[in-house]
Length: 91
Image (cartoon, rainbow, N blue to C red; front, side, top):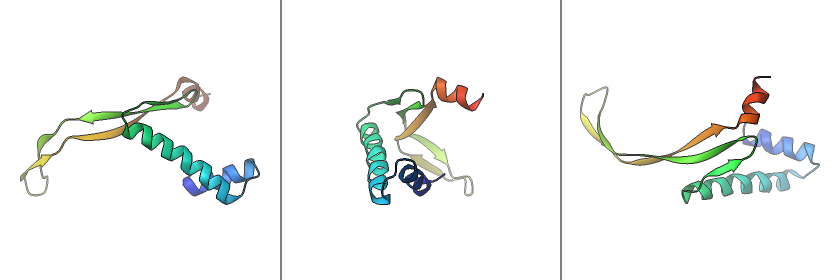
């Protein structure tokens, strides 16, 4: 399922226009992205949680040339599945 499939499903289940469903889905994702950008954890009970993991910079190696390259510090989103969702998938 991709984002447009999710929008269509929301519109169908809740009898919404595609425009209204698009606004809802985009608002939901924008709120999660904004919270993570501000280093806040996002927890959706029964589904899972999102947080940012911080990685330090290091000197890596280009696998094709063997040349040393500097890898800058970075932040990456991390999702941890919730207990209820895990149980649902394994039932």
